Length: 202
Image 1 (cartoon, rainbow, N blue to C red):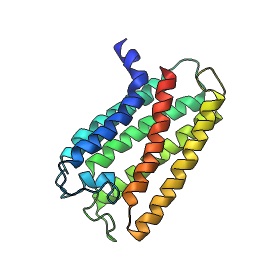
Image 2: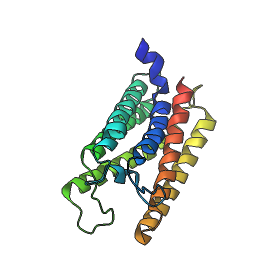
Image 3: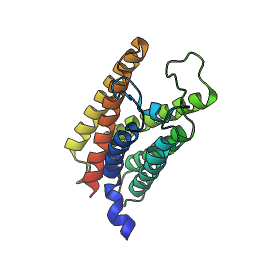
Image 4: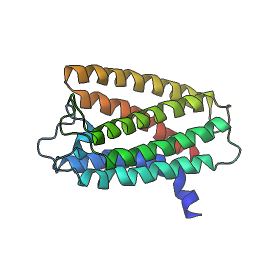
């Protein structure tokens, strides 16, 4: 009963947790630059916050994402597309755990990444993809009192904006300039969608 009361809020809680967690952990990383550096650099191999970052962010966030996704899969009278979207959110949570356990390299632009860094990067890609596909599935699902036409439009707009800023991040990575800024904008858009979905289910 307690889980059912809290579960609808978990998408919103996870989003707030991430913002606060990154802000707190970055205080223990001297001269950390949110615009220039990736979020994952807080947990990079050899960083001052290598151990702290996954403990504060990845591991608890993975639980929140997984529980929220599981809640969605258990909702009654929901279409198969919405259930799949719930499983994708669970996948996002699993990817969050993996990305925390396997740290990226200290140099994010290295030409020869370690195995841990490769696993971290693939986990990050799965995280990105899961929260891009989930809103598309919601937009394609039948219209209901919960999944309104307005939320469907919002879902599509969110995906388009997230993709645009992800592309901007890719360009910034090549220039090695302000990649962290564009990464954050892209992820913020995805989390804004997740938070809105969370509030709709309340």
